[in-house]
Structure formats: structure tokens, C-alpha cells
Amino acid sequence: HQLQCPGQYSPLEAFYEDKKAVLPPTGTGLVTSCPTWTAASINRCMHPEMKVCQHHNSLASLKMLSSRVSLNGVTRSSLQITHPAGCMSQFIQFFGEQIMVLWKFVLLRKRIVIFSPPPIGVVCYRVYCCCCLANVSIPGIGVSVPELRPFFYVNIADISALETELCYVACTTEKIFEDKKELYDVYIDNQNVKSHRSHLQPLLRLNAADKEKYRKLSEQRYINTFIRASHSCVNCSSTHF
Image 1 (cartoon, one colour):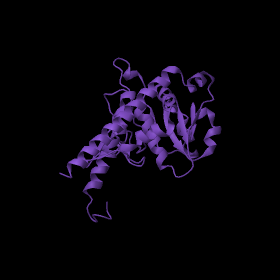
Image 2 (cartoon, rainbow, N blue to C red):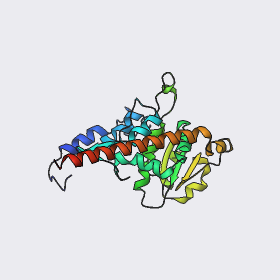
Image 3 (cartoon, rainbow, N blue to C red):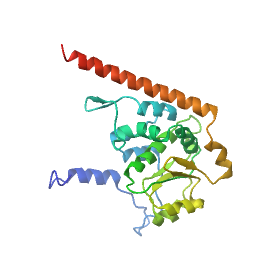
Image 4 (tube, one colour):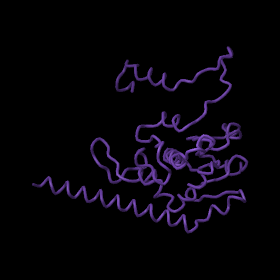
């Protein structure tokens, strides 16, 4: 921002006021506890297109986020994974049917580590998409369910912090995390989803219900793509008259 508008500090001041932490009234100047992560707090750190929908269940969010997107008045039929509005569609395409396995693990609030060699930027969007899948509002029990905390990058310096986390999804470029099995429940390397927990092994296998849900999701995405293509053809034809 300063390269484009040198000397203009009001956006930086607004950013500081929005993101600043509140020190405890201990007089020591030390932060003794971290704030609780909620969907609202995650949303505050996101671009507008990335904000988590508070009033839709996960499967509905999958359909909604993978369907039609309009940016600056232009409908885009295909968005790159590097754009926040297109990451969910690319996320589904990358994992395929495995998306249903991930869905179950995030609903169960398991600790998930996603490994990828550098660059890590694209994988950060997979962390975000996992949080979208976990954002389910169920009347009566939503308060008692902990939020799935996102860590958009972790390394060996964060091991002590991860040891205290109950549920999270994180990405890393350090292969050593695969050997730190006490830190996670689910480990993802590329499209390989695995777990060393014996009680989670059955969830790694797709059942008939999982395949049926994925089939319906794929059909809905195909329909949305067809509708977009039809609208584009109509708009193109109308410009010739």
C-alpha cells in the first residue's frame, strides 16, 4: 500500500485498530493467554470472498462455494486456486472422493497436519477450506463444540504450541512432523490421507453413503457449470444483434 500511496497511513492505522491484541491487566506487559478462535475471528482475517458462511451446513457450503461466482460484475466459470473465491472448487477437484473423508475428520474436530514441499501458499487455502467444512451450526450443541483452529504455517518452533491444541488444521513444509505422531490425528501428504490412530482407520475408507454424497455434489457442480456456460452463450449471442 505504501508503494502505491506513500505517506497515507490511515489504512494501516485502521488495520492496527482492527487486529491489535488486548493485554491483560497484570501490569507486567506480558500476554498470558491467547484469544479464543471462533468463526467470526477467522472471518475477520479473511478477504470478503473467503468469509465463512455462518448459517449453512458444510455440504451446502461445498455446493455454494463451488458454484457460480461473480467478481466485479463478471461471472467466472473457472477461478484459479490462488483466488479465495475459487479455492473451494479446486479443493474438491484436488481431493476428489477423499473430500468426504476429510469432511468427517474435521467434523470430529481431529488434529490435522497437511504436508507439502515449498511453496506453501496453495496449501494454505486447503487449510482454509477445511475450516469451511468444519463450520457447521447445529442448534443446541454448537456452543459445546470447539472451533477448528487454523494454522496457515507451522514449523518445529511451533511444536510446543501444537501440543496444547485440542483440534486444529495446519500446513507445514517440514517432513519431520510426520514422525511427531503425538501432535496429530490425521496426516495429509499430497492426496494421501492417513492416520496412525486405530479407531480412525475405518473412517479412511469410503462407504456407500460417502460415494453417494460425492456423486450428488459432482452432479450439482456439473449442473452449475452447464448453467454458466448457457448464460455465457446467451450473452455472447445477444451482443451480435
